[in-house]
Image (cartoon, rainbow, N blue to C red; front, side, top):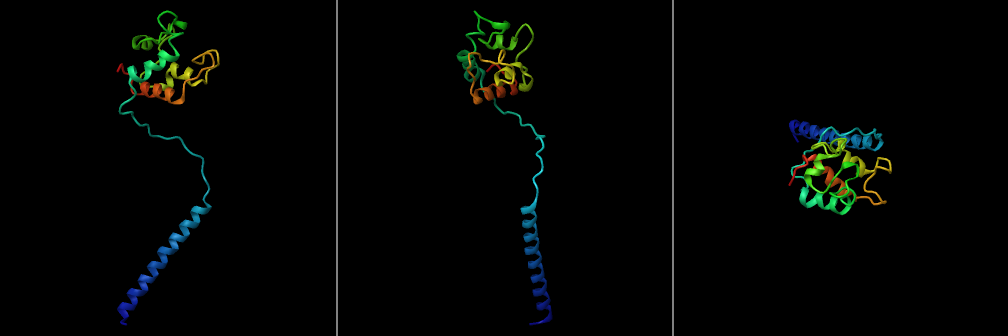
Length: 146
C-alpha cells in the first residue's frame, strides 16, 4: 500500500472515530441533562375558520342559556337568544370582545373560575370543554355572525 493511501485511510479512521466519539458524548450529555422550567409560548396562531355562530354557538346557547337569558327572562339584562342580543351584552357592557376570548366575560363565567353565584350555567350544569373551546374559538376568530 502506498503512503498516500495509508494517510487517507488513517484520516478516514480518525474521522470515523471522531464522529462516533461525538455521538457517544452527546448521548451521554442528553442522559444526564436536567429539565429546565418551561417558558410560555410566544407564538399565537390565527384561526383560519372558526366555528359558525348559527351552527355551533347559538344551539349551545339555546340548550343551556336561553331559559335564563332569553327574550322573556333576561337575567342581568343579558339575552343570548340572538346574535344581536349576544353582542349587545348587558347593562354593564359587552360580554363578548371579538378577537379576545380571554377578556370576554362570557368565557370567564363559562370556564368557572368565577364564584358559583356567577358561574354559568347555573343548577350545577357545566358546558363540556369542547363547547367552551368552540365559543372561545368563535370569539377569537372575531365573533362573526355566520
